[in-house]
Length: 74
Image (cartoon, rainbow, N blue to C red; front, top):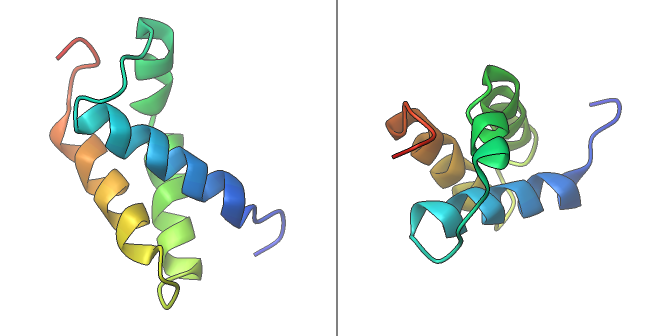
């Protein structure tokens, strides 16, 4: 995939799952950004690209977490 950034995608997944687990408090602007379709699309593309990697479950978990949260203020 042109422009693929596996490390950045892994950090994004860590940010999402850290927030989802309640261990990370994020500003409202970041939460709004995380809930953009483009962010979920990026996580999905990263999972498709790295589906055999040891961190693939982290990407899928982050994608799923964003699907459950429909409002950034929850």
